[in-house]
Amino acid sequence: MSESAPVVHVRAIAAGGDGVATLGDGRTVFVPRAAPGDELRLHNVRTHARFARADIAEILVPGPDRVRPPCQHYLADRCGGCQVMHLSPAAQRRAKARIAGDALRRIAHVDVSDPDVVASPHELGYRTKVTFAMQQGRLGLHPVGDPAYVFDVRECLIADPELRRLHAAVRDARGLLPQDDARVVLRLDRERGRHVIVRTGTGDVWNGGKPLHLALQRAGIAAVVWWHPEGGNARAVAGAADPWPATVFEQVHPAVGAMVRHAALDALGDVGGQQVWDLYAGIGESTVGLIERGAKVASVESDPRAVQVADAAGPIGPRRITGRVEDVAATLPMPDAIITNPPRVGMAERATDIVKKSGATRIAYISCDAATLARDIQRLGSAYQLRQLQAFDQFPQTAHLESVALLELG
Image (tube, rainbow, N blue to C red; front, side, top):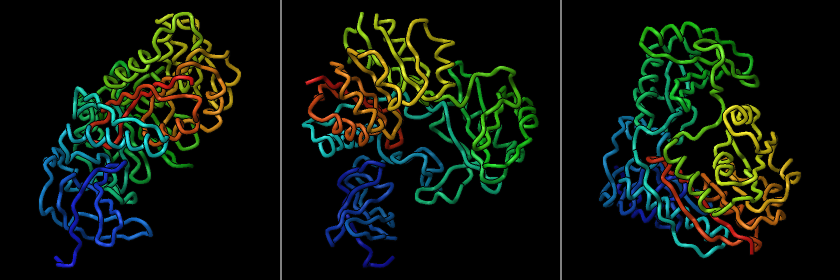
């Protein structure tokens, strides 16, 4: 070990989960797997004009919140699926609260304290969907900073125990999967039915669906097997004639997802008799909640499969539109209130313009990325004021945070 290798003190966790420290030349350095309070010797320092990135060569003094990660892959394989498993659960929530508060103060220019973060009921075993990559027969994930390589995953501890059983059986039968350049999605549906979705590249053909289904049956696992070629439609190839559409988006942590949804509905207050927009409505769970509270609902969702699920399972009454929010929201009846739940990239700028001009008195914004939430609040400008911010640890062991912001007109 070179004595000239830089030694730093980690002061915080940045968005994305890296530790933040300062090099001797004053540049901020971002270090994966670092914990606040760590004193570290670094190596592989990559400098840029205003910042640097580096890896841990040696932990000289561990920070008070550093714990031993329970996962065999987290340190040994530098698994990129989780980012903060080396921190205690309380420290993870403190770091996420700081990330959320900092984004809103810095990007949206609002005076807000770091939010309290509601803990997950489970720190491990919560995910109902996990996506693995295939590479030279290895069924696994990518190491931090190395998206070109896939290491073999023996067990993913944040996956639901039923998914871990499914993963073990699929792993034993991985010779039936495409051996390179494929994605294998394992998920549980809302009835806890098991699904294996094999995603292949353009022009690739996969004929292993029925043999894989038989192999899973021999292992005592009932599952629907899907093939989803790039640019084409997913179709079930074994296990069910009329299956639940496994490619439709649902929250991967249903328990906390329900907490978030109820918090957003509660934030809107009394919506009885009011016109409410449900934007990025997904399979219509918020729409159902609004109707149960007496609202008249118009919903927008771009995925036609999700709209079909909502129509089949939801109540009669809401006006459902299939399309992009920025393309169709302006055609809806003027709202009294809005609930919006966009993907991680946030709302399209045209969508925020429509919301800004809608005249809605209250907006409940469900966000899975503090930076895009802050950007969208900034786009809304002085028309809407942030009145409430709630946060939820929906994805323990990762740097991701779910939050609900209540915005009020004027």
